[in-house]
Image (cartoon, rainbow, N blue to C red; front, side):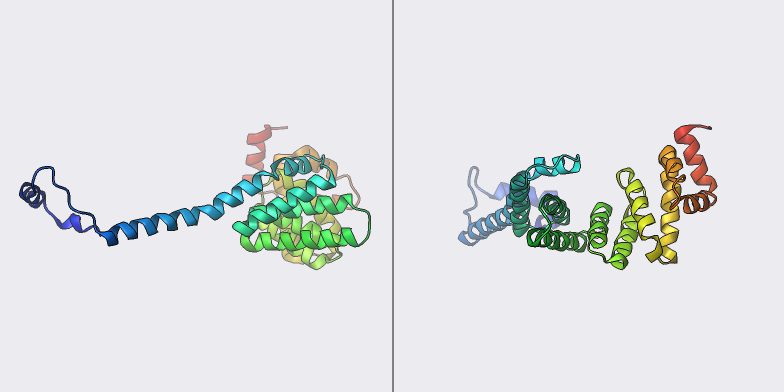
Length: 248
């Protein structure tokens, strides 16, 4: 608590009248030193975040190009990935680690089969795992981790990561159809809870994008699960559908 908070207005006036006009209280060398140290400390606390943000800026364009489906050259991907690695050395960030995993995966996909591709995929997996450790509430990071596990043949871990992607952000339009595709591929490896989440994802996707789910229902590997899931639609989900699309 500020010590002056206990001083009444009349006491302040008395003290002010007792002090000669224009006089200033001499500053204490100790106070000045403490003030200087506090300033250095505050500056030091801000430097890592600032340096990390500046390093990460160098990867923005490449990341956007990858996400738009037009990945840049392997050389640019490598530089962008290193920029994010440098940023994370200053200040670890789950979001930046997830972005680095995306860039490393794009590098791996551009490389021919062999040791370089394997190394890049291993680095991408490590970054994706670090991302969800630092920020476990990222549905996109969990989804990317699921895809890397599936790519490596680890279906059990892929199912778990997919489940956590659905739990951390069920309504993510950019992810929902992708999750369904992966869910159908991993269906035989799913436990009852994961299948229940997949059915819910089908219903939520239908509410938002019914035409895409209707197309999906025509596939031999999907129609039974889609049909079963839609039979479980709640009144709330139906009402949300009508608000979005009207009665059809």
